[in-house]
Amino acid sequence: MSMTRFMTNSDEQPLTQAANQTSITYFSSSSTATDPAVSHQIMLENDSFTDPSLSEPIFDSNDMSRDNIRRHIRQQRNGISAADQNQLALIASRHLLAEIQRISAKRVALYLGFDGELATGKLIEALWKHDVEVYLPRLHPFAKGHLLFMRYTPDTQMINNRYDIAEPKLDIRNMVTVNQLDMIVTPLVAFDDQGNRMGMGGGFYDRTLAQVTDNKPLAVGYAHDCQQVSFLPIEYWDVPLPVIITPTRRIFSAHLG
Image 1 (cartoon, one colour):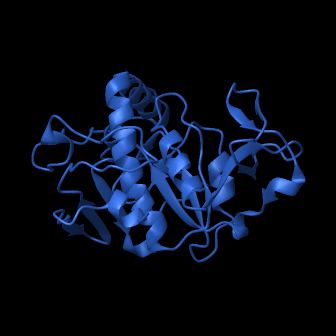
Image 2: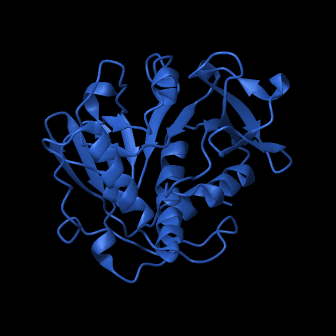
C-alpha cells in the first residue's frame, strides 16, 4: 500500500507564498483520503479550512505577555468541538505523513494529544502499518526538566506522570537518544510565521531541541491553525522550529533549514 496515496491527491496544487525567509504552503484542497490506517474518509464541509482567503485572521498578540498568549490560545484550542478535533487531526496527519516520507524517516518521536492538542492516534497507527518506529516522551527520572524517548508499540505499558499525562514505563531497552531519531514532532501552545514556538512553560522541549544539530533529527511543530499568532515574545532559551504543520499549511523557515 502506498503512503503517497493516503497523504496526497493528484489534484492538489499547493499555493506557496514567501515572506522574508519563510515559505508558507497552503494545502489547496480538502480532498478525501481513504486508507486502512484511518477509520473513515476525511471530508470537510467548509472549504474555509483550506482556502487562505477565507481563513480566520491570525490572532493579534502584539503587546501581550507570554502568559496571556498561552492562556488565550489554550482556551481557543479547547473550544474546538470534538467532531472538528477529530476531523482536523485526520487532515493534519495526512500532511505530516507526507513530511515524514519526504525525509524517509524511520524513527519518529510523537506525543499523545492533551489539553486540546491535535490528536495523534490515527497518525501513530498509520506509522505502525508502514514500519516506522514511534517514540513517545517521558519525564527523565533523574534530570529535572528533561525528557527521555521510549519506543511505543501497541503492547507498551503506559503510566501517568505527575502532570497526569500518559507516558511509557521506563525501560532502557526501549530508549533512544535524540540524535538517533529522524524526526521529533513537538506539541506547542502557540507559534508564529518565523518558526518560534511557545510551550506550556516547563522548557522540556526547549532542552530537547537544544540537542539537535544540523536538523538531525528534524524538529516539526504540529498544531491547530488557531494556535498561530502574529508575534511571540521570545526568550534566549527558546528554540525555533524549521517546519510547522497545521491542517491547512506547512510553514518552512528557510533560515533554520
